Structures are given as structure tokens and as C-alpha cells.
Image 1 (cartoon, rainbow, N blue to C red):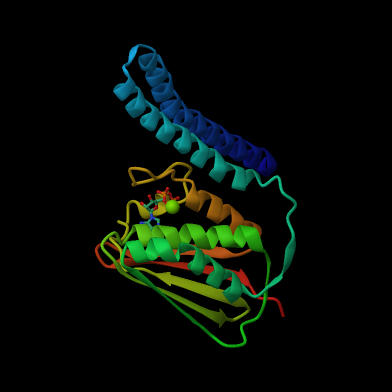
Image 2: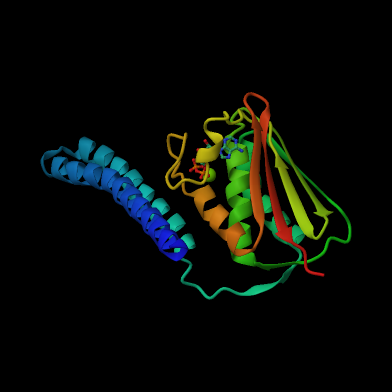
Length: 225
Ligand code: ADP
Ligand code: MG
């Protein structure tokens, strides 16, 4: 019975995901169809405008498919021992321009002599990108993102503490649900993908948040000994 239950659960998740994907792709597709039709009879000026809107809809489809492909991960996974601070630094570097534009200061503090973590670097990078991006997006008028990394028992723990708008208690459990987003241009796929990756790493991820104060994301990964 337990196996059956698990299979049914999986089917439900797959079904939900499929329904979500269909819905999310159909919206921009409907818009594209509409504008393609309009374009036939439009003058030069309107055409340019329609074309720009269509470009945005194409980009949206591309973004959604890109995030879903990370989950499908057709590439060969290479789990290796990694210096997670080096990976984290790379990601901070990558998102630095975005942070500066939003007046967000990212501050990384880590213990010396941290143990290595057995991980898939491109996937772990993706998790850090998603979490840091969310923190930046939660502070549109600026603030500090403090990242603290330290050893906790046989785990390496990462604390991402932002000073953003926070998340209400009712909304907290919805994070990681496919397509759950509160952002106008969000996909609601970043945390679903990140939860799956942390799960594959036998790690743990949790949110603590206070409305109007900020959010802390805690990620724990098994340390190699
Ligand atoms: P997206 O960023 O596309 O909305 P995510 O899966 O990355 O999708 O996040 C889902 C939702 O979780 C966000 O829309 C936001 O409401 C909430 N969230 C995640 N991280 C934070 C954070 N640091 N501060 C406030 N809200 C957050
Ligand atoms: Mg996100």
C-alpha cells in the first residue's frame, strides 16, 4: 500500500506540474497568436510595437522552459568534493551588477577551514543564484544581504539573511510549489528547482521570515569528513 501511495503521490505531482506548464506556456502563446494576427493588418508603427511585445512573450516562454530544463537535467551529473565558498563567491560576482542596481550590499562571512561538500557544482550554483536573486528582489529599495557560512555538527550551514518585505505565515508553506509566485514577472520555479537539488544532495533547506523585517533562508549540506 505504501508503494502504491507513493506512486499516486508522484503521479499527482507530475499532473500538477504538467497542468502548470500547460497553463504558463499557453498564456504567452495566446498573446503571440493574437499579436501575429494583428500584425497582418497593422501599419509600420504598430508593427514595431507588436513586435516588441511578442519579443517579451517569446522571452517568457524561453525563461520558463530554461528553468524546467534544470529540473530535467539531461546533462551528466558530476558529484565532486567542492569548496563551497568558491562557488558562492562566483555566484555573488555574477549577481553583483543586479545587487548594485537595487542598492543591495552583499556581505559574505565564513569560517576558516570549512570542510568540502560533495556536490554537483552547476546545480549548487543554481540554488545559490535562485536564493540570492530572491533576496535581491525582496529588497527593491535596497538593504543588506548577509551570508554566513559555518560548520554545524557534520553539516555546512549557509544562512542568507535579507532585509526584504518578508513572507507571511500563510504564504510560507507555498514556497517551492510549482509556479507559486507573488511577482509580476516571476515564474515560481526557482525554489521548486532549488528544493529538488538540495534534496538530491541529501541536504536541508528552510525559511524563516518576519513580515516587514526580512527573511532568512537556511541551507544545510552534509560535510565530507
Ligand atoms: P519567483 O522568484 O519567480 O517568484 P521562486 O520560486 O524563486 O519564484 O519564489 C517563489 C516566491 O517565494 C516568490 O514569488 C516570493 O513571494 C517568495 N520568496 C522567496 N524568497 C523570498 C525572500 N527572500 N523574501 C521574500 N519572499 C520570498
Ligand atoms: Mg526566484
